[in-house]
Image (cartoon, rainbow, N blue to C red; front, side):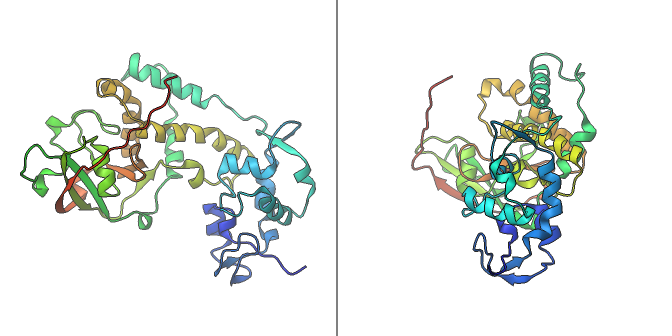
Length: 343
């Protein structure tokens, strides 16, 4: 059998990419497993020790998931279009671990896995909204939060320099660029990330995203300002599982991190999900609290998914860092409505 070499695209993990493929043991070429061309290659066995630690934290159970399935579910590994076929992922893992025996077994959550983090967050969320807002009876582990947010720092080079903000036009006169930034403090209402009275600048990744975020009606016109922002230190809450790596950690740290990821996903959902205007003053409080802490940790903003388009948004804690470039007018031609049965 000819030599078989793998690449970082097979796994989709940042730690493996930075620590094993930055200086490939084989060189570059076409990956035997996912068929990516002109990519850095290593021998699968080079990754054995890293995967042995990860696989070792899981329990072998009678009614569980296959090894590729549980690693894909928990850590977003093997999401490449070729590797989503478990046969290909099993083939690669067998070569990494030099064993086919593991693929006749099924796996469950790690021993000691604590599933109470989301329950704790839901209790805190309820207290912030309807119990105590400033002096909480339940403790928040801010040191742990600080560490988790440090794992989600977006590489500034991957963010566009061009961002957009929209305002619905009230008449035929377009807004000047100096009227397209964050509102004055006295007019800053409750936002997903900002408390009332503390203005943040919310920007979309495209004009369409920016217009969608202001919930226009068909036939209305909107001014869309283009802003450029410098390289920022932002926390990316879009896909925590894809950004956080379990490799390079001790067993207990892997288990704890696995328990923390659903909380980070919930925070991303909090920033994304639609909220009725009448509920905003209290529904936004939990995400405002955590975004204030992110700002306190020295970050410039948070990146999150848009709930009304396929784009992304960024909330800038310090609006003055954005430079206005130009204002253009857009007509809202059509809106799409999606409905689902209420639960």
